[in-house]
Image (cartoon, rainbow, N blue to C red):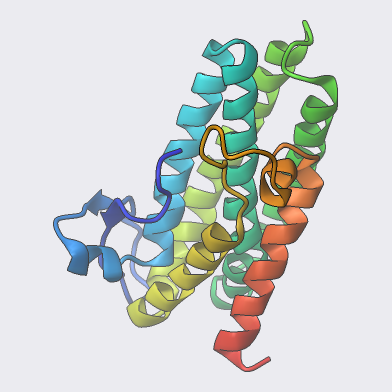
Amino acid sequence: MCRLLNERMTGGIQGKTSVESTGPTEVTDVTDVQQQDVVDVLFEQHIQIKSLFSQVAAAQGARKRELFEDLVRLLAVHESAEEEVVHPAARHNIEGGDQVVDGRLHEEHEAKQALSELYDLGVDHPEFDTRLAVLAEAVITHATHEENAEFAFLRQNIPAEKLRRMAGALRAAEATAPTRPHPGAGESATANLLAGPPIAVFDRIRDGVRDWNRSNNGN
């Protein structure tokens, strides 16, 4: 699966001014990657999530199952960091933050439920692709809401250095997430977790982000 954290960066925007372009820009070297902020990472993950939905829909058999597991993993990394770090920052730093964040949390809860239902259904079920398409549309709409109502205003209202530190939550989530073992490596606890219920993957990654948050905020 493509790496989540090492492809895009852009500098932060400070001050409460009108919203302009907030998407990621091209990384040119290792220094750029190290300076990547949380908004850069979130934008890049949105692109990867959209791509994985398309790949799952087009695949068949064992490959479809593997790609669906990768999608669960990426969504868990993304949403766990948002819930534990990004949304609280938005709630306290942007105008109307409570309303904005509550709307996003509701969308995320519904997406998790739909993801779990897809897991229970199984990729070989005749209704899987239809339900996957419904979930994909909901997740993409959710991502657009985040980009327009949350990410842009984080860039306006939070110092660039803090946004760069917040990217550590995504790195912690990625480090905690179960990965697929090399073919022939046999069964393992992490491999079984990756193939298990989405809620188990979300719980494990959320715990890792919470540990990072406590370590970096003294809580």
